[in-house]
Image 1 (cartoon, rainbow, N blue to C red):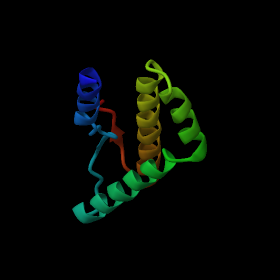
Image 2 (image 1 turned 60 degrees about the vertical axis):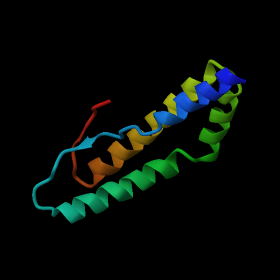
Image 3 (image 1 turned 135 degrees about the vertical axis):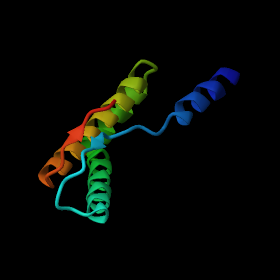
Image 4 (image 1 turned 180 degrees about the vertical axis):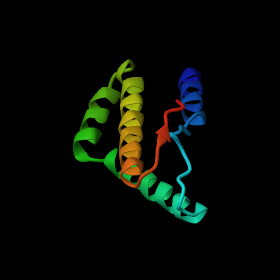
Length: 97
């Protein structure tokens, strides 16, 4: 029981991860860039919550080995969607992960 609590604490302590570092774009204000970034973050979060992704994550999460793989898969989906959205809006996203 004690080990389970430690594992949960470790997994939840590092919840923040970066989607990528956005290069500033000429011709847009800081407010517009912030709005574009928030919109793309929201799209990345929505893309990660589709039914197919949820089912795969659930099945992988049933095993000890599959849980880290499911987390990694979720993060990769979010990063790809964020980069695609920002590219459509004209920004360059540097991968710093």
